[in-house]
Length: 283
Ligand code: GUN
Image (cartoon, rainbow, N blue to C red; front, side, top):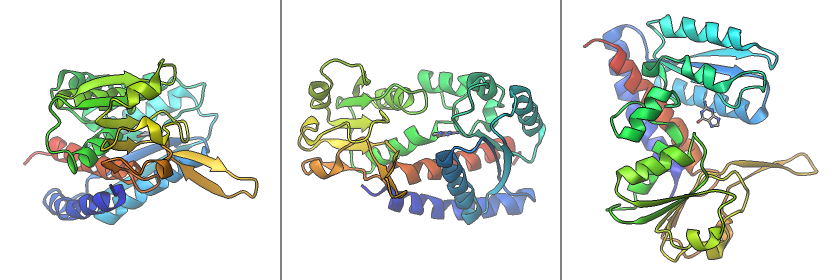
């Protein structure tokens, strides 16, 4: 399953919508990105998000702070962005440095502008199935699955990983589609046996090559959310998924890394930004 191709189609389909919004409102849908510190992976993700925004006509504003930045500074910038009617989406790139309480910062974002879907109000709406802004990676996983699964009802879904960003929300979305969902993690006993029961296997464990070929049932649909950077001795960087892709010849479908879930996360961020902008604008 090519996430890159699906994301490109989605992004292209947003262009007209963004142009229409901008012409009618007199300003473009706008995403504010807050980046703290110099984590190389975060810097790459933020650069990609901003580049994709520009491609479809979404305005982006970047606020960068160095790693010693205080929580107060972040709370103040978020208050300003919340109050600015020409900012529709606010994204704080994670992880934040240790001196900052990430929950406190995310909780300060206006839920209507929470395009990452991390605010407790949006988390609550997801868990009760009552709308709100969905987190981008889980939304991207579901779109990829929907492209190959006709009917989710009663399928066995196994999620490996219990993070707030991916594991928990993707499990809720699968449950909403009436899958039988098992949430597992790195300490789960008998993980390979449980994985082998899956019709749908979503892996977000952050452990390169964790899922071996014999963990995958023939015909299963495998979504690999892992993005693991490996720096070789010669300084080159390889990006590896959580699934040993080359061992999985027997899946019904599988996402590659790179080019699978990653581009879908960014496409869904753009979708959320346009959705938030429309919801915040009259007519
Ligand atoms: N860090 C890793 N993934 C994400 C994400 O989806 N959003 C944000 N804000 N930070 C992240």
